[in-house]
Length: 284
Image 1 (cartoon, rainbow, N blue to C red):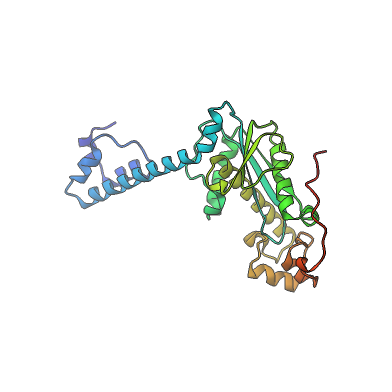
Image 2: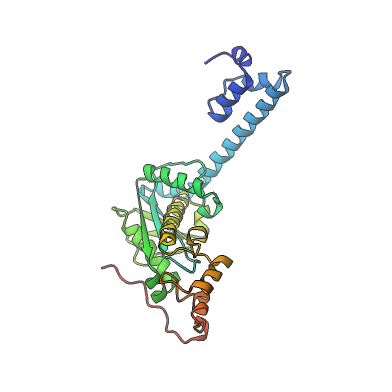
């Protein structure tokens, strides 16, 4: 590594590339030397490097905080901790998809968070690709539209979650589940309110569930063009309402949902007498 004196003679563009773009370790004394430099660009670079360091420290603290539930289980010897979450409860069309993910012990992935907080679809896909390479095991579970309409969306979400856990290829020592508890779960579990923002394992599952379902909706968009499924992913947007009104209801629309029933000219669900939903079907 060049000395601080040699680095100060290096073009600032090269220092920017080295210590900001490529995030190489900053030699001791360089920041202080840049801050004392007469060049405005050098002092600006020092401020940017310090801001990046503070950002990295904050991100490290956030990731450590996200592992607190997992850490409690790891110290008890429960190493295979599965995070479980779902995507697609609110849309009017398409399946509900759940994912389960078992992270390596003390795993950290910069930028990993609740999928709802990551608005950039490309960033979600990048995180999902890294997770699929790094995790101990992962799987998705799907509940189709027919199941949603038969047992209701709440129970269908639980069914998808159970299928995701069962698809891992191993029985977890413990499962951390976003907000709920899974009927007939093959392992002990804990439901955590807002778990996708509080547990790294659940956050990982939320990313995998969301990206999987988004890809499914893009495939359905190719099958049913003109409804905008690739853009709104089946959610109740004005574009979606207009497409249902003009083009009609598709087989993938959830007929137990009020706006779909309205488009079909049916009485809203709350005005009909329905028996209680059946329990989640048992494992075969």
